[in-house]
Length: 416
Image (spheres, rainbow, N blue to C red):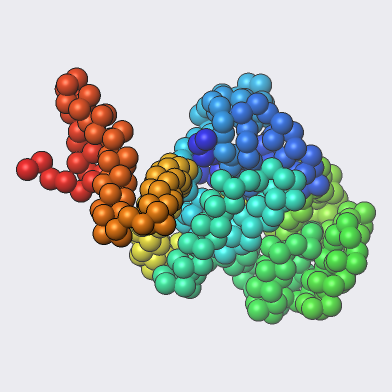
């Protein structure tokens, strides 16, 4: 059985392609069941975020069936092979660790991805699609991520996606004290962004969410107003800054909403930041005068501060991951020998038990103990060496030097 990964991320494909293979969180349980039903897929898990969609699998067969399952989600006119990447065995282990540590993120070192990986693994466990191979992979990955963040500066020097969003906003607004932000969604990214805005002395915050209860819980912590998604159109003209990050498979903000808001704002500029995949905001909004639309792909152009420190920390983290990957692979390889070791031990114990029983009978019959022990030692030695000796003689006769060399290594005997 082999480990296999196929994926698409912010490095290999633009957001307009990534959104085609992003999975709706509410549909992920059923999607996992569908994936697990494919022939040759023994175990599977899906990591789907705004920056990546990756399938982790343990396969009993060829990977073509998983590859086809994922690439069928691309538009018909797109050659998926130009955008996906595929990894196997130790490459999967190394990649998973780098993802968990934030080394493969659009914002180097960002910590949210580790939580997203843990969620993906927990969901695979709940759907019984993750088995022992993926269990060992993800537990190793989480352990390495903890060690890397503890022993390197990667966790200290990162610039979060939320802070990068603020840097983009600074390109439009000189300050935030008199500004109003409309935040669509109530998840972790929205909360982090709102915290950054409050640190910048944001004038007013409005949270729009499908679940008003969740929005109110967030609003109470950060002194914000709450509206439903159906009120966005009527409230948008009040917003200087619109930040959206939901898991909705459908558009939340249409171009007509923004046109109407801009008309009421009398050409005051509006910045819109779409952090969602699939995108929440109609991409045509970017063509409107006085509307400044950014997506998650634009964050990479902002993350420049402390680049030398982050790169140095990333180098240290990569070296650690390489070391731990080697240790993991050696451990996995050693596990393959466990059944053989058990069989050998069982066979040797059988020989020992038979010889011991015979010795006990002879002692009970009055034979001298020294004679019985010497005979038992000879019996055990002869029985244990009979089969190996026969095979080694055959190897010598047939010129099988490979077997002779293996025997030398196995018994710790030099060529002399």
